[in-house]
Image (cartoon, rainbow, N blue to C red; front, side, top):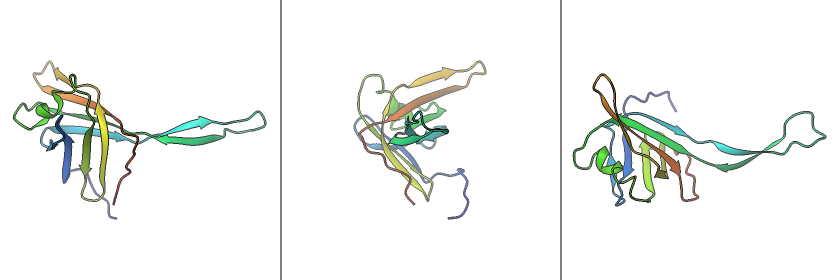
Length: 136
């Protein structure tokens, strides 16, 4: 696989509360994705260095961008976060690779900065007990 940039994603979609995927690439200016593993310390009194076991996989995502209240855009996707408890599929397609998992979004904030800019942010945490790694 050759080197690539994040300049143009083929897809960045998030399900709305009804389960319909919405392409929100035009409104997303930044995103980060984490895929940590839990770690259990199993170091005994007889060891001279740390001993650990890898535990369950986890994932979180943070999306931020410019506010767009048009139909089927980012506001329609996230406006129900405070009032619904539904898992939403997030798909990130960078051409190769592709990533998709189920997330619970825990917040939807708008921030109006002193310069007049209006941005939103929404963090999500893995749900459903299934972890899907990057596919190529």
